[in-house]
Length: 197
Image (cartoon, rainbow, N blue to C red; front, side):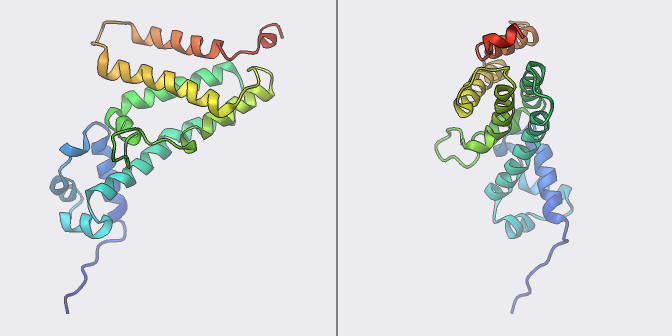
């Protein structure tokens, strides 16, 4: 009877961490399982034994990436609600995308067989928390927070992808343009009474 090969207890975490770092900037198709395994002192057999294959390893990386992406937004949602905090959330969004361009694209498409973005309410939970607090404090007009969050996400996601994939470098001052984008997006949500408070 063949012996079942065992692996160090921490190998799963090390493989995920190594894949995470590679996928920050590399497309999954260019990531070599052989090289990834070798960098962790193991073989590709370990990846297949632990994860069942490359797809599940990538899915695990996506779960970790979504948690890293969302964490700062959850912390912001607990701060004193203000327009500055809402703008900071938008800045964090863009900064993470720029620091992790391949992961940013990947986390919106992982698990999709059609290439379309995978969306569910977990994406919008932290921003909905912040929006609800801003409404409760009379800063924003009462509105459906899911609809509001989807609208903000659509415009911000679109800006970031245009900046990363479409606009030639240097064609715009994108930092200044993004600040204007945030002002314009937030301005449409303001409660007019808050401006005179």
